[in-house]
Amino acid sequence: MQDFPHHYVVKASALPGEPVAIEAENLPEIISAPPTQFGGPGDKWSPEDLMMGAVADCFILTFQAIANASKFEWETLSCNVEGTLDRIDRVTRFTAVTVTATLTLDTRADQGKADRLLHKAEESCLVTNSMSAETQLVTNIVAS
Image 1 (cartoon, rainbow, N blue to C red):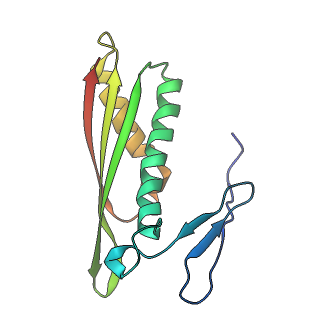
Image 2 (image 1 turned 120 degrees about the horizontal axis):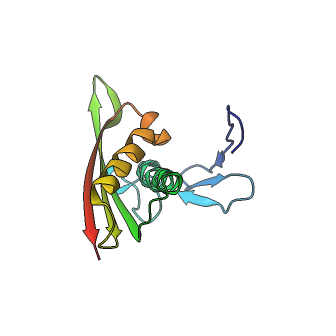
């Protein structure tokens, strides 16, 4: 890993009334538009979807790193994220985020350790740590 601070650069552009093209060096372009809740078409990623996707992605990547450092073996991790967008004091923002993580383990794995590592991933996720929304983690551990 590189020393901190890290810097990330993203470029976005659009024509009037058209979707937004989001670009970053060496990455495929993402096309976004407003969600249906804001009168958008609902057929493209929206900033709201991308933000919740960033939470899910960061949670899983953080868990992978923590589990690897702890030499903890697991089979699959899926993550559903639900964000509540509200308007409070004339400011629209995410006020709550619920991360529901389902971790599948071998039947011999330590489920208590798995739960602790999931919570550590939630506490260490840089995306949720950068948000003012209240974050809740719901864990489901499945032995297979």
